[in-house]
Length: 411
Ligand code: NAI
Image 1 (cartoon, rainbow, N blue to C red):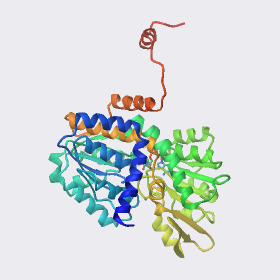
Image 2 (image 1 turned 90 degrees about the vertical axis):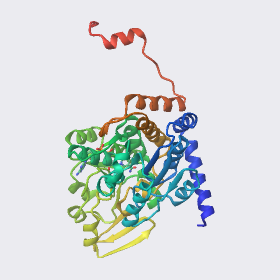
Image 3 (image 1 turned 60 degrees about the vertical axis):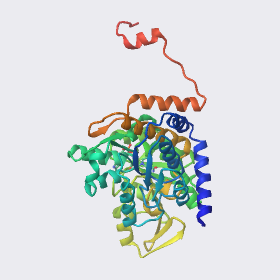
Image 4 (image 1 turned 60 degrees about the horizontal axis):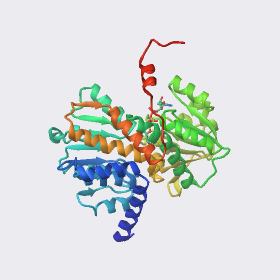
């Protein structure tokens, strides 16, 4: 596509997303007036698509210089990246289908602005800062982390005494994970799977690996599409919850024999591996919505396969002799690598948290370590979202407040 056309298409996508992100729009207006990020330099590694672009614009409007790259080799939308580069104080070095070397080289490019604030989705940027670019650490006021896997990595760094900067655990805000991870991943994973395969979900056996926030969303929407849902878990409480939510629960070894479509959402590795490929049904479709492409063991699958070919965009066929297995988007997050990611209305809340946490970092001196998103930010995002949806709620009366706080009233 010609560059001008690419930019126009990216602009259209960003405009559409912006129109459906009313909470971020309110924050953008306040940033425009108050310029809380004046003079700040922000380095970001996020999925470079339209909703992220609206966040980037908001930060730049707040006075920051922003440099962004991708956080996954397959999730960048080149038109959005090109459109972002036309904005003042914004640069993007993200590229779709980049090699591993290009992916990490782009991180060095965004770090060239010598950031004082970082935003990560998966903690790759922070990892680079702590390994190869430690000379930049003294400048850093703090960072924000978008996803569960990134928080796991950062907490592990903190535990080992290796984390040398403050980081806000944006993923752990209630207005993030309860909505983004559940409703966002739930809807967008099926969008990615359905637009890629153009196959029916109704009547199929859908296996969901992991019943965390993402898994619950994926299972809930699969049920709505008419699938028989099977959940695999390692946590007895989550397994029980899955069972009482009406799903079948069994080990992957059993589920592998009967599943038609698999979606892994564990944030862990080796969820579907050789022992499962040995018994998997002919025609099974494998996809992943967890952050890294380590949930489906593609190395072993490739090793077992007599042949591998692309049969349709984002679908690879692995010929196992008597059976054929299909992997979507090379086992990378199916909703982003084979779709447009979460709906804008959901990212509105996630990125409102990001914008307000960046402001929090700019205005407060935080100690090194992983910080929870302040309750006021979480509540503020929920209130703004309700307001934008035209939903009013009750408030506590004085008597109710007293009753809730006291211990003397009984029957
Ligand atoms: P979570 O921690 O709420 O859930 C993960 C679940 O997987 C837990 O219940 C855990 O017990 C289970 N699990 C772990 N190992 C397992 C195994 N071997 N077999 C079966 N179950 C296992 O995490 P959450 O928030 O649901 O995130 C999951 C992954 O999705 C993370 O990598 C996260 O970064 C990513 N994510 C992806 C998004 C997307 O757009 N595709 C959006 C948000 C998160």
